[in-house]
Length: 302
Image 1 (cartoon, helix red, strand yellow):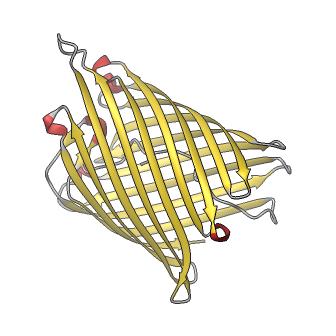
Image 2 (cartoon, helix red, strand yellow; image 1 turned 180 degrees about the vertical axis):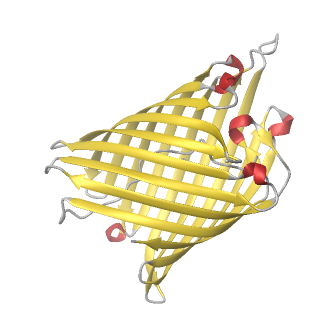
């Protein structure tokens, strides 16, 4: 984290924040989802391709994650996930996404440090499209019993199967603050990030800065667990256009807001509904567009 359908291929591969009980040295979770997605504007953001076409996709997701508390201080994690979008009218936007990760964290008396590596492979219209290797070195600390701070240095290596000129390395930094209320049932999160990307073709080099915020609340509805989450993201990117004889620069501003509701309905089954609106403004007129994505899924957790 964070698809010429908006395939979020430059996914945000940041570590999720969650708590796992320590009663067992090894824990795991498996999850499967089936859903229907509506996309108002089909986009391949990695190739700067924007279509005014709308389409509906059938979605499928599967995930397996495990955690082993090797010692009282060392925790090892790993997992694999697969996601598919199958569009009904424009199959050129069909996307398969494979992701694999491994994470090692060591807890000192006052803080924790860790390293994480992510591998991802995106397949667009049944053809290999993009490979991503990402390594993160992070440090985290509970400032209080309800305030958690996490920072990370991130290195990415991106390879495009059909457009080598966009192959790139990316260096970035993240800083995220989490505040918990109501016994952990409510969470506020704020984040800052910056990144610098250098591609084989210099016209695709960019610097970007991002802000994000999130609020999540867990409660009970109809006697079942329920959860709502609201996310806001802002990103400003500046490119160097070496294809021009002038010093003109491409500048992009992206803002998005997403609302998600998850409602348990029976045992390990729940319904997830999402709607996201994004506004994308660029100095390149063809990259100015608005997009609305809505999704409803049936989720099973094992």
